[in-house]
Length: 128
Image 1 (cartoon, helix red, strand yellow):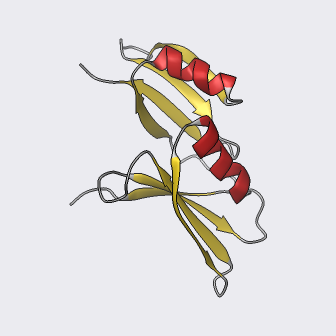
Image 2 (cartoon, rainbow, N blue to C red):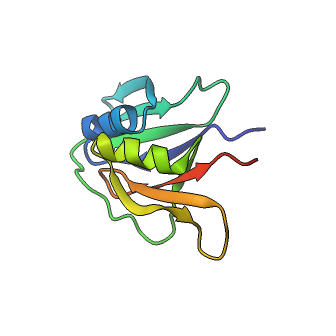
Image 3 (cartoon, rainbow, N blue to C red):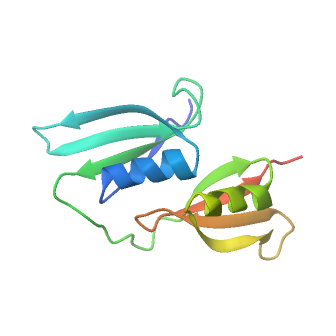
């Protein structure tokens, strides 16, 4: 068994695809409209779905925003260097909501980015 994907609902699919591909450097892996269900699914990730976990962006036609709620936490992405990744994301227009530095009560270096819908993405350095 393995985790295939995480799904989040987005209010503007084009804006979200642009953020995940242009700001975070993922690739659009596939996209499909479902006219009978009035929704579109787009899958983005850093590699092929057969080899890793990806992110499913679900756009329900006519819904332009969602309340994030209190149950969802964040998406985590491993990066080579948290400080450099945060600066690169900022340079591409990404919103850093927690500057790089040690996590609370620990030594792991982390940072947080916010996507256009308000979802938080944690940047984590590679573990030694």
